[in-house]
Image 1 (spheres, one colour):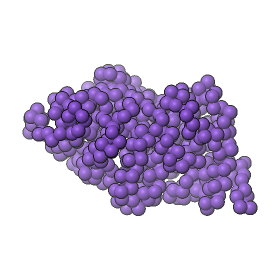
Image 2 (cartoon, rainbow, N blue to C red):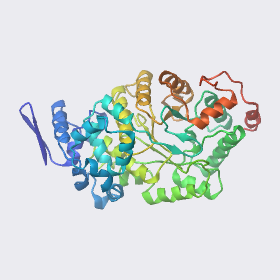
Image 3 (cartoon, helix red, strand yellow):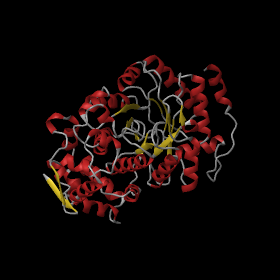
Image 4 (cartoon, rainbow, N blue to C red):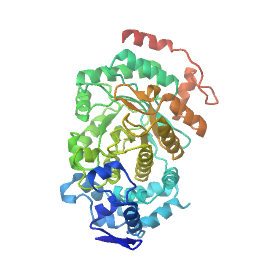
Length: 459
């Protein structure tokens, strides 16, 4: 049991997961789950108590029982006590102070990452201001490789997302070529298929792989089908670069997605065996989002931000090329307005980076949320300052298949120009070679490459 007194009122928190939940900044999902603080004073009391809690508490008390949950078992069984040793004697509050000091460099944070659990970094996030989340995450660079190098300092990559409401090949190619000529696509050219059928996904993979080979683009492709569909495609000899899967922070939530850790390990090994990467072998692509466990009825009484951090505990088992939080996609039931979406995006990026993940963010919202494109502009800029690995490039920032609002090719360009950021080095050289970028890094007006005309005609 934990307790704290604020303005003469004593607040009792019967267990660690209750303390964590009530220390979380207000969000609609926790209210829906019935775990949020009842008032601001209770939230402050919980944050004060959490700040004084030893980090080592999270190694002794599991929020989701060890014997019931394979995610908990994976987190605790892979914990590196030697890496944890430098901060083992700190409280959550003292750890936050240390993270903000000059001694917490990229190198020290990289060495520390295997010793941190998701619950530890979630706890620190709960007592941090937005500026703290940005300043600490900006120190940490996580570099991954497949055909390009992602996450280097001074770089901002993007996923080119050419979705189409009928998976029309011409529409997908037109969006993809438009994005490439505007400097998007160095993280991945990734399509969300309307249908998860192996036949449809196979054709989409061939379409994007042919475009990549025709223009000799140093990037990777992905059709964001279910992992079982991708395993079938690998068996059929499809040109699979990355294996995609949505993941969550509890075993039961992952079961609702139709996956478990064994299946993810199988997919990772199958993709590695293809040897399609030219400069690296990071082959997994994971997406997450606050609220997914609650929407599956699999949250075990925990708050959504902590469970999101636990999803990163799953992701880091597989050394992925890409991880991103789709921060406002589930809807206002979980993140009500722009303020909550911005806060959640910064929290997720912070937690993922401290755990050693190559974090990106789909800064987005649904049309029934109390948010607009100005909120997403703000979040995109803040994430770029915080050193986010990649963001989304969606035609017009409006995904006409998934029916939500995100960030556009032009938004990525604007942030790169404002903050003097560049795409991945291999992709930057390719843009220059194509005549789409000059030697100073400015994009140039570019006619449609002649080599793609046969592809469009065939599609």
